[in-house]
Structure formats: structure tokens, C-alpha cells
Image (cartoon, rainbow, N blue to C red; front, top):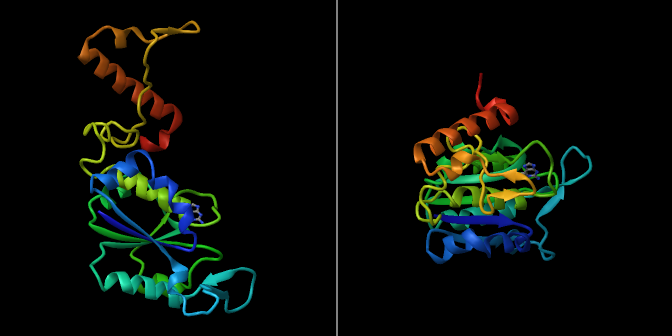
Length: 225
Ligand code: 6GU
């Protein structure tokens, strides 16, 4: 998958992809990630990318010029499956939309800042608007990093153990069950006997039951009943 991120703060998007699974996805060729500085597309001598909003009011608006130039430069080279705008008024990200996005070949992610982008950018170019939750961040960059991480780890071959993405919380609509490793007892707390018993059927049944219990307790909304 190729991902092009357009941002005014490219430095915010270095370290999330420079370690661990996101780094390996790039070395193994599953992810081609490009971070573009929106200011490089400004015609302004001060490299400005924002302006006062029509109608007045506090806060700047990201201008149409640099963004349209950045997007059209990319579109001239290849077709994009999605052009995503990161914004607190977008649709809230969930595992379903991550699964769908993981099938895409090329995507652009535009990070919002200030009061956001001129509405005409959204009308003309954007195919999907994503929020990562009901709270406001200083900009779309950290949210974009979250989308990329959540999507890229679903591309076949990115995770070492092919099955492990399938047993994640949410992947089957349930939270994941509790997990344990050595030692068998810690501060008086014991690992459940069934996990030490060596019966895979019983272990599987216990995990399903615990996943259901945990979901009912913590996220009854996921069960829809
Ligand atoms: Cl995508 N951007 C900003 N600025 N705030 C957010 C968000 C995005 N998602 C949740 N809050």
C-alpha cells in the first residue's frame, strides 16, 4: 500500500513510523509512506498556507491553493482509492473501516489544522472524513498516525503471526480475553487453572467466555442487545 500524508507538521509524523511494526512494514515493502510538507506547495513568499475566514471570527482557515496543488500533483502520478481528511467532525474510526481501508492500494491523508480546510477542498477532493474520537486534538497528524497504524497492521504479511490480527479486540466484535505469562503465581494471584491444564478445547471455551464477559461489562454497546 502507498500512503501520502499532506501536513504542515511533517516532523510529527516521523517517529510513529520509525520503529517496530510500522518500520518493518516499510522495510518488507508492504508500506510506502510519503509525508509531504504542505508549505512546499505554497505560492506565497512566506510559505503561508492559511488565511482569515470569510464572515469573520477567530481562527485561520487552510487555503484551497496549496492543498489542491498537493493533491493534484499526486493524482497526476497515480489513481487514489481514497482521499481522506482528518477532522473532528468526521466519521469515528472503527475496526470495520480499518479492515476496508487495508484493501486500498493508494491513499492520501490530509491533516487538518487551525479552523480546518476551506469547505471547497472537502467538496472537490475528499472521499472520506475520519475522526478518531469525540475530543479535539491540536491537529490531524496524531490522528493520521493512528489511522495508518491501525490499517497497515491489517495488510497480510505485516504481522509476523498471521492469526494475531484476527484475535485482536474488536476483530470479532468482542474485546480480547485476559492473557497471562510466567510466573504461575504473583503476589498471591494465580493464573487460571484452565490455562495450565493443556486442553486446547477448554482453553478456547474459557477465552470465548471471558471475551464475552469482558465485553458485556466494559463495552455492552458492542453486543447490541
Ligand atoms: Cl482527525 N483531528 C482533530 N484535530 N481532532 C480530532 C480528530 C482529528 N479526531 C478526534 N479529534
